[in-house]
Image (cartoon, rainbow, N blue to C red):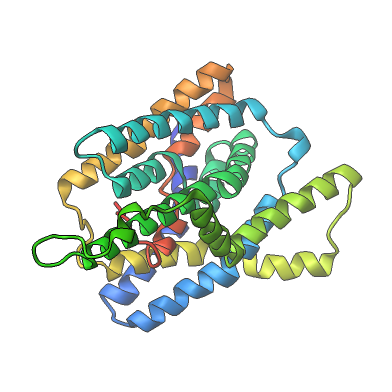
Length: 321
């Protein structure tokens, strides 16, 4: 049974996060303290300077030799189920949409574990929960963020080709350039674009270096020098606050808080609070998770959507619920 003390601990962990979000929203919407240029500068500060240190700080705490591999397999099964049905929907259903597939997968599968997951899970399940969130975050950065970025680049490539084909048609719809008929984005060209984008993404390097350091440190029992640890910590401590502030700024810059209408919001809540936990439950039962690990694995799926989606929205035109 959930006690009032447990509820208070969760509120205690979430209140500072939503205070930062509210300040970001109010700075743009109510008090008009930040212009569009200021908001872009804050996004860049968060993306290029704060989040990389925040990412490295937490990823380096992962012990790769003691990871919960059944949990990782269950998470993989859950995401595979969602990906399979979205692939069928996008390719074989008349109303299938590639942009909606990306949005739905992100909303069901990817969590705001870095910014919100650590404080909330620390309040609800201090030992097991935080370990699972950090492990899930490492896999999310190393695998799923790359897949999402690949899907976005594939969408952009297809849109560019359709635009070129439209430009090569006359007013009667006749194709003036026969060479454009067979133009399709190759897997190699899209992967080249993706890796070029990732090479400019400091969070990818931070996650990779964090994993490499944890492999070395946990194998040979190395410890970061205190001067290095403090340099990382001073930037990392700003991660949660700036991350939530950035989300508040993003929401405030939209014309409407619920841009898609009530129906889209209800659909988003259905994805987040039913489809995501349901698929994770299936994956957890398949690999035999139980007890606190099962509860923590389901809870971490319910956490808020992937915060980097709000940052990527400025570069990729996708649907953000």
